[in-house]
Amino acid sequence: MLTKKEVEKIAELARLELDEREKEKFAEDLSSVIGYIQKLSEVNVEKVEPMTGGTNLESITRMDDEIKTISDSQMRGQILNASPNREGDYFKVPSILE
Amino acid sequence: MNLEKLTIKEAHKLLEEKEITSVELVEAHFDEIKKRDGDIHAFLSLNKEEALETAEKVDERISRGEPIEMLAGIPVAIKDNILIKGAKTTAASKILENYIAPYDATVIKKLKEEEAIFIGKTNMDEFAMGSSTENSAFGPTKNPVDLERVPGGSSGGSATAVKAGFCVYALGSDTGGSIRQPAGFCGAVGFKPTYGAVSRHGLIAVASSLDQIGPIARNVDDAAAVFEAIRGADELDSTSVSVDWQNYWDSSLDIKEIKIGIPREYFIHGLNPEIEKNIKSVISKLEKEGAKIEEISLPYNEWALATYYIIMPAEVSANLARFDGIKYGYSQISNLSAEGGQISNLLDVYLKTRGEGFGAEVRRRIMLGTYILSAGYYDAYYSRAQRVRRLIKQDFDRAFEKVDAIITPTSPTTAFKFGEKTQKPLSMYLADVYTVSVNLAGVPGISIPAREVNGLPVGLQLIGKNFDDVKLLQIAKIVEQLTKEII
Image (cartoon, rainbow over all chains, first blue to last red):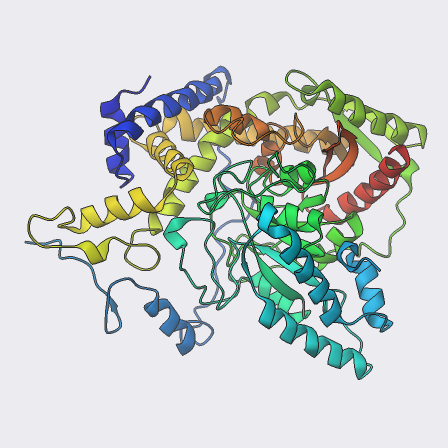
């Protein structure tokens, strides 16, 4: 069973603000799911390689080609316009250094 | 003529023969939406003006005697986590409530080349997390077969739109059953292609190693027609694969040549006995008609759901980190005040934006993933789940050395009532028990309607070998035919 304190810690790491009532509900919900996934400890995974993706493809690369998408000026404008706090062509964030 | 119940093939033929116009076809679907979507709520946004403009263009081409593509002039609904340039794309989340897509998803680009008609964006569980469409930030969708019941999820709006006659076919996305389960609950055909067969570029990511786009349609032929239009390698999705696809239409698969596997692990605890009976009657019919039926074993299936509920939330927690209130979407940054306010620094912007922008299930899964990936737990959960995932994949590899396809139920129950599972997330997760292993293994899966139970649709799932999608569709067509004879 996760404690309220543990839930607070996870929420902070996940950058989610929760209210007091939610903390209790999430402690209960997460505990029941974590209880269920413990089931995997029954499986012997010795000498089994992890499957890290949906295909067997490895390290696919392509040529950089800025002509294709990035220089689409209309798209560039739309992407910048979607920002909730913009200055010129920059996304503006609060300063993080004193 | 009932224009809102046509299949793609029927509509295409009528358009070509000038029996109907694309404008009439589009109008008929919008009329139906106007009449019934107030109750059902399949759509989050509609696009009538542009739809009619495209329809007029297609009609002009037809009147000039030009040949048209299979999907030209035919109305399609798109799940609201797939980007259409210039259209609102919300993923049914408050955090993207006003987001306008700056580009087309690759599947949309491909459909535009065919001059498909986009009539609207469909409702879903927020960020495709859920099995009932109850997790939409904009209210649930109702099952058109029984308005007191859920349509399944997460592509519930797409399945509903097809069943209700609001579109001829729809696109959905499937991470753990999100195309197949709602198709099963609504009585439609839902196809999840092999992972990598269809580009994911422009699909809002949930769990990148599991997500795949696919069609929901009225029959297997239609699903195949859409699959042929949207598949293919794409340099903007480095997990998409180049395949020399065979043609669905020019083959002649003989029922006597197909071998079907019945996994004993799928016909045990928790399965509604009436559903079991219906699936088994299809199997008997197949055997009677000459298909070879073999009992098989997928021993690691027992751990598929637990594996899924580790890998999926882990990927979710990473993918959804991008919603930070800085680049796009809902943000609390405008409430920033230097001194004394509730939001005084960057961390506060993140916490408030994400705390308020995401619904309960999304936050639950982000936190679950964060926990699983955190120091001290990574090996016990994530690393172990990746290894069990390989064992699950090897189960399928072994099975497909012996059989061409596997038959299972799509879901253990028929559509459930609203609120039945929302209080206990784990009970909702169990709705995916027959569908998640397909995504873990990357194999293709399709749900087709079997005989109903108490007036509610039942889905029969067929699973195929990686990149044998066309063969799977051909087998599905044979099973679809037999199923109709039983019904």
